[in-house]
Image (cartoon, rainbow, N blue to C red):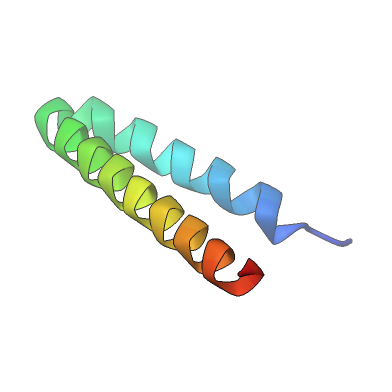
Length: 55
């Protein structure tokens, strides 16, 4: 049985976040905001890196 980590990991994270959100809505909101901020920063960094490499 072959499992694709790329598909499994987001599902596991989503389930964990959903369970955490039920227990602690305020804490979950903070985590989601922080995660969104990290994702934005990471995507900006990747974009800059790709531009640097292509130039």
